[in-house]
Length: 272
Ligand code: ATR
Image (cartoon, rainbow, N blue to C red; front, top):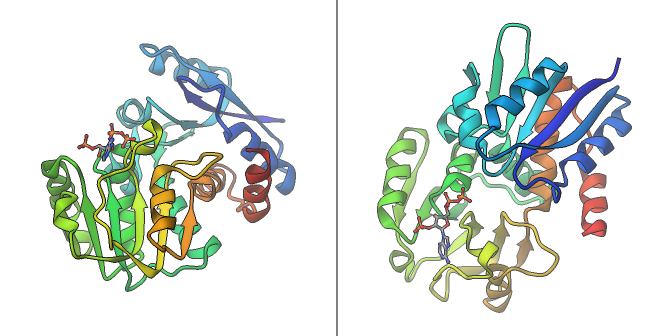
């Protein structure tokens, strides 16, 4: 029996998830098929339910449906509940489980693949939208010295600060508040790179050991990574590793088997 999985989004044609999960299933010998599913913008729940009726076992959820998925599931993991977004659904007989593997994907990429420990580091997270909210809990669970959330609209950074205050050492503000500070790890979770824009980071924010991490993945350096390079950041990374690691965690939730990721990251980098 071949089990059926899918990534659902709109648009979806560009998604790399079918490639990644097909590699995982080949590598681990799991009998499964994974496809891309386009849902109408007003038809998310209907498309999910039809897929389940056809025997679907699980789904990845991407833009713009992560909030809708959070509402649709019948049970949430803690990290999905705190993220207020679901990127992974697992169908069981009597429940629809919603998880969010984005944050652990980012944490594993930084720690395991890039080999940079988060523990005791000063971290700057730029942005306060869904992408930022999804990664805060796993970052705090890795015990940074401090996690600073900076956002153009300051009130949104403060709101996230309050929401996660019990989970670790946090600070929040806008970009002007960062003047005179520097960080070991600087993560871009804004949508600025999508518009080829650079968040208004003050000069001097990077130190010689800094990692600049853009959660977006693209063929060429994003404006943020170009700025980081010019400013002397030691390590530059885009979101390719995070994408593969979040997929691996979803795969593990569904199949109880942990795929090897480094080779898939290499393949993906070659293909883009
Ligand atoms: P996502 O789900 O991708 O996080 P979102 O919820 O629309 O998308 O959030 C986009 C984030 O990128 C916000 O934090 C936004 O800042 P504001 O809250 O001030 O709008 C941030 N953002 C978008 N373009 C930006 C830019 N050019 N410079 C800095 N921040 C930007």
